[in-house]
Length: 405
Picture (cartoon, rainbow, N blue to C red):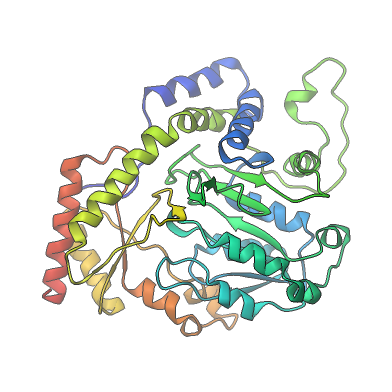
């Protein structure tokens, strides 16, 4: 069976993790701090905090902006449930909007139509690693009519003076938009380093801070670092130094720090990311597109344009003119041929927790139409050329078996 997305674990990863273990320092320490520095340099953002997950990073940023009961947060209906769950955890209301037909990403026009005086945050999601339309989104929240609509409830919201853009970049580290990397495209971005991501630390994430003046991103980093350690003013590494054991707790924070074992993996992956990992993933994407471009039933994913370059995270193939039931049958046939595939994602309003709250997938027709026809193909570093050919053939034969095309 060809797996869907196994992590890349080679000798370089093993050696760096072993070095962390032998150092005697396995929680947050020098490797984590170095990884943060390297991410800041790589993305061009102003400061980076590594976290235990992207979910933790999104939650902390919502809490930092004091998002809570009575507030609304706009997000796409087409995303993983974590994007919505963090809003619920803060006591705020998720406001789902529809997505673009071409690229699965949030529709700027839908954002505009959903903005109210209760809106505090917009969370664009770079689905599959393809950046959202950040210039348009940034300009929208800065438009004088939208600023007039904004109703701040605290000092930080007053200081920003508008809706904050919190990018869910879980898929998109390394992607580019007008020559700039994700992480530097808007107010704040959060990356995921989960096991199935391009750049993995087994679990983990990072907050890339890029807030405008008069905010000091270094000061925000220091505050979030404290928040990630239960509100404790000193981390374990600092407390090991002579006379530095005493600390205070200034807030009921979270347990959301990254460990040096995780950061060790990230340091290896980031060093070889562009020339090695992204190059291989782009090769696989191109092979799939070349194989399917002349098939009348194939709607290929957009992953490069004049303005944007994807991180090539997942290959979202859509089959034209099929039902959800036919899509599921095609997936079964592909699995029968020894190839693992997936679907990214069920629109969040379809999921029981959200549908029971009154959300309805029919209110987001573009998202649902894309979902019902989508099959995600395997993309990972160690996928061989021979296996790529097997995937391609399995898809073609399975589509023909189900649809006759």
